[in-house]
Length: 319
Image (tube, rainbow, N blue to C red):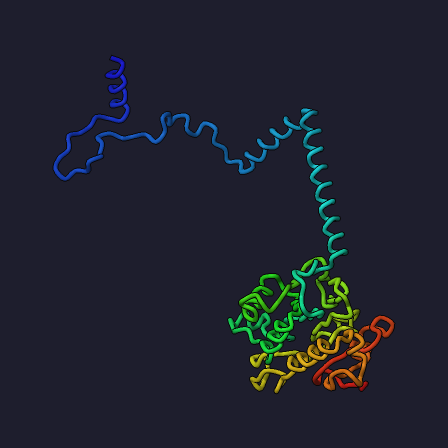
């Protein structure tokens, strides 16, 4: 009885079924079907107020925070999160101060040397314009030869760039696809980058023995506080940026000279600052210029000593 009664009500609600003729849809019905069970009340609580949900949430939070226990719990939780965050930040700063930007060496290297390279216009030429043109990345001549030699003597090789981490990884995919030539890389971060043209790459921040650290750069301003360990090279610029369509500089042998310098340091065991300062013993291609002459916007008391460079980047005033 109950089952037949329910079936009758169901059939009354959806309408009577109509006998199917040949070719009619199988699921066609003879009456209309309402979308809502009670369509008279479907729009009962409708509102045009776009902030209705936010107001209701505000009312709810007001009721919750009105309870003193909940209020103390929420404030205590926020205080604990803030304290834990400050402790983690302080721990990170302590680790950076103790172990430097690189941290400990990844392994025991056979060579004593740590050789640091800038990326843009030092070992490759790419830049924003090339990125927009979807042009390929151009490694500097003799880069593969230099990296292979550093790999042979098992020296620590570091890339240090003011570019993003994504860009640095793209460079690594081009110059070191196997991951065997370059030991570590440093990209733009708040730990050292000052977000202006006056940022520097101070080799002391790496926490490596300065007697064994050599940094290769094209910007004198970037190495103003570790100039005794730096060798400046000419800007390497791809041909698309030059009027003659040729890469600059022409007949570029800068990285081959760097290879000879590294070879001298490796075989002689001479500390890097001592080797660069000794005009009689160092590579004959190394020239020098006073810091305040190379960077005229810095006073002499800030930019002390000399810059060592190869090529025609500056007019030499020394040996």
